[in-house]
Amino acid sequence: MTTLGLVRLLREAASVGLPVRWELGAVHGIDIPLLVHLPAPVASSALIPDVAEWQRRHQPGLCYYRVGPGFVQIKDVRQPEGSARFRITGDQELSWFARLHDVISIEQLDTPGRALLDALLDARIALVSGPCATLLPHRMRRWPVPALDV
Image 1 (cartoon, helix red, strand yellow):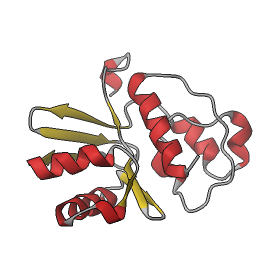
Image 2 (tube, rainbow, N blue to C red):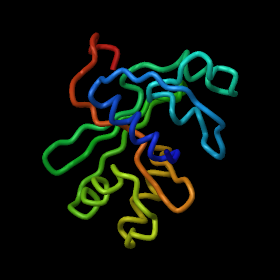
Image 3 (tube, rainbow, N blue to C red):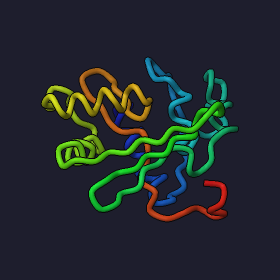
């Protein structure tokens, strides 16, 4: 499975609250701290740098998005020094956001799609690996308990 495919799988599992038990192999070119909002690999992966920190820091609600009428709102609190909020509006941007939910080829992006991807990359809420990209935040379909921690 490709790296972005694994990220998408973990993101979907987080979105529906599905527990996932998995083991991480070698990591090449991925900034592991970007993934702490996704289910962490099992303890045997803790020998890989940054994985022990991932296991320690993981909790629901660190990086997610919600969909409303005519907008998407992203909240990111993966970094302890502050949170970020990102709001996407406009039909073209929303359409590209929906397409970035899958793993897509960057070559498929037109100018507005590339502008959105660049903005998401600057905000550290999208991930590129080789010629492809996908989103990092998962869709918050229901609030975790206790909801006050989100």
